[in-house]
Length: 174
Image 1: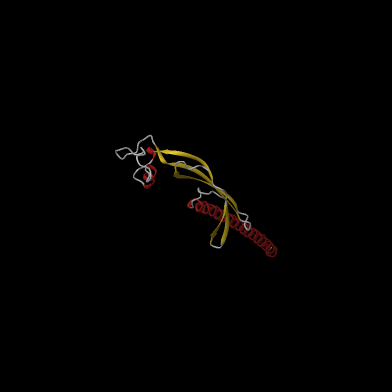
Image 2: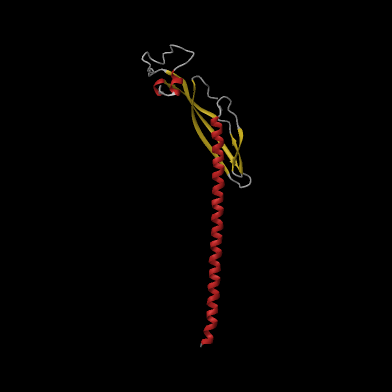
């Protein structure tokens, strides 16, 4: 009887070895897939950050004077992206009444008074803004859209951002 059991032990050991090999291969495939998913997510986030950085660069400039489309290069370490920023679009321009401004701030002072025009009626004799008068400023809303497409990784993203700006009253929305 001892001789018959030796063969079955070898067979059970081989089956267990095959099962352990299959489990190891499955774990390696799952790890490889996870690494690809994380890598793709990282590339997408980098492209998103590149588009956002390009929009911030446009907002930081005087883009309302001459709105135009532009290509802005953005670098993250070794990764280089080019963000295509469409021509900014002014979606609305609304006059700001004097009661919407804080005269204690620089923006409020600039919108409530004028260095060239005296006796405008915007400020009352008490130095407090008259509540129903139009200020020297308007509030414009702009929509800025940037897209980033990376041919190497296939990452593709479009970002919209709205921005409100205070501009001198009478500035046209172009």
